[in-house]
Length: 295
Image 1 (cartoon, helix red, strand yellow):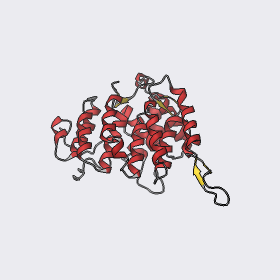
Image 2 (cartoon, rainbow, N blue to C red):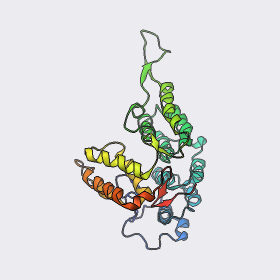
Image 3 (cartoon, rainbow, N blue to C red):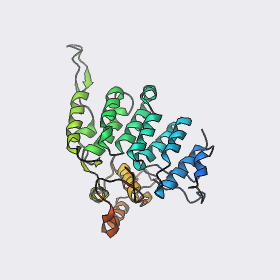
Image 4 (tube, rainbow, N blue to C red):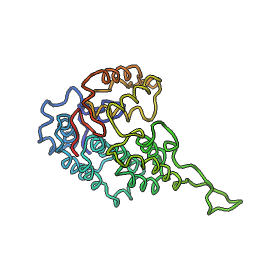
C-alpha cells in the first residue's frame, strides 16, 4: 500500500483533524489530476478538498480507488467520506465495492466498519442491511458491541437498550444440566424496528428524531455541559463538522488522562447556535461544509 502523505496526518480521524488536511497540503490538491495519482491517498485528499468546495462529483473516482486498493485503513477513510458527504445514490457505489460476496470473507472489523458507514449516512433505508450483517456476524470480534453503538446513535436519544445490544437468554438447544446462553437477536431486531417505525416520513434520522444540524448542536451542547465523554462524542463531532465545516480539532487532546475538552466543545457549539447563519440549515437535510448534499 502507498505511503500516507504527511499532510494527510490524522485527517478523517474522529478524535483527530476530522475533515481537515494539514497546513503542508499542496495548494492545488483540488485539481482533478490528483484523483488519478498513483498514490491513492492523494486521490482521497483531492476528493476531500473538492467536497469542501461543494463539488460532489468525486465519488465514482474514489469508489474506483476502493476497488483497486484493498487496504483496511484506506477503505475506512473512503467510507467516512461516503457516509458523511455522499448523496444516497452515490452510497450505492460504496456498497457495490463491498458486495456480499466480499463481506462474507472479510474479517469482523470490516463488517463493523461497513455497518458504521451505512448507519452514519443517517438514512433509514439501510437498516435492513445493517441488521442482516449484525445477525450474521455479530458473534465475531467487536461486531456485536460496535454495531450496537452505530444503531444506537441513530435510533436512541441516549445510550439505552439498543446501545447495550442483544441480551443473553437460555439456548433451547441445551436442556438441563447442559444449559448455555445465546444472544436474543430476534427481540433486539424487534426493538430496533419499533424505533425505526417512527422514521417513516423522514429522509434522515439521528438521536431518535428527524435529523437537523441545529437540533444535533443543541443535543451536543447539553452533553458537553455535563463534562462527560462517551461513545457518541467523537462520532457526533464528525457529523457536526461535516455539515458545518467548523473545525472541532481542539475538542480533543492526546493526553491519556483528559482526551475530551468539554469547555472547548461547548464554546464552539454556543457560537454556532448564536450565529444567525445557523438558521439556514434546514431540517431533514444533510450538508457538507455548508453545501447542501444533493439527493
